[in-house]
Amino acid sequence: MKKKVLHLLCFPLWGSGSGTYARELALESNKDKNTEVAIVCPEAQEKIPELKIYPLDMSFPVAFTGHPDWPHCRLYKDLSSREITDVFRAFLVSTVRAIEDFHPNIIHVHHASIFLWVANYIKLLYGINFIVTVHGTCIAAAEQNKVYIAPSQDALKRAKKILPVSGDTKSWLINVFGVEFAEKSRIMPGGTHLNMFSNNGKIKIINEKYGLDGKKVVLFSGKLTEPKGVYYLVKAAKNIDGDVYIIGDGPDKKTFEDIIVKRGLKNVHLLGYMGEDKKQELHEFYCRADVFVAPSVWDEPLGLVILEAMSCKTPIIATRKGGIPLAVKDGVNGFLIKPRNSTQIAEACNKLLKDDKLNYKMGEAARQTVEQNFTWDKIADKHSRIYERYGIIKSKNKKQ
Image (cartoon, rainbow, N blue to C red; front, top):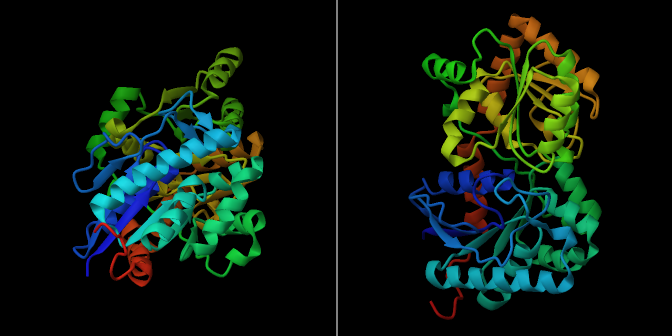
């Protein structure tokens, strides 16, 4: 029987780690002739021919830590009880609409938050099993606003499988929601595609467009928010023997612009957010970069941007935080440094910028790490076995 998987995502399919995770997993899963995938998400006009996408109707955009497509969005931690109820109802209506049309035999929720509550309710209504991927930021919201904890705990009890994206995320989940969820949890990091590695012709185009010929390039890509630690990269720039390119947008962008002007940092370049329309250009930057820096200051899961850079044979400099050490091995495919330490960022960058042999060796090791452990086809295969095990054989959808 064909597996019909319905993903529930509270963010657009581009612009966030969980959006990328859901999108790429869905696309890879859909390649299996025995699997059909659909997604409920906001801004469903972002059509993907291979996937059935149902719109998530939201009266206002809301995120856990912010979103580049929603510069003025609300945060889950700040919602009132009435607003949370309104969001739940909107999510439920959109999900029921999708179920009545798609008839899934399993639901895959992203984030242990309001959509998880919806899946729990759907289980009672339709008998459809659900699993949940825990990306991390949802746990932070629950810590900041305790009203999320009890309904999430109730839903986690009924979830067939809990999939934290890193060991650190699993520990965080258990600490906030309870040790009873350890047994049904399985670490499931994201992945990347090996075909991102570029050729010299495309690198030449990037060099010409941004004036990179002859330059040593240090790259960051991601949200410009305090937890990402970009401030410490900007602060380190005056001591880095190369140019720092920052791709992304967020509430801290104006702060960085002011710092760059005030300190006269001519080697720091803010390029803004590169969305789906500039996806290929972003990939070329990963390939062109001599070093990728991930200076996170919070215990985030393994960032997919790190894996994308590694697949392009770019060595990584990252803080020893959250799920990052799952992929970045100190002295092997990059360097792990202390958080909030601009001195170590500059020293590690210069070590890789000055030593071409070391840079090449670590870049090759980075690529090998991804090939062995972090490709979307491998991740999708693991999910397929979970869908097979927990998907209901015959839907109890009363209107089917």
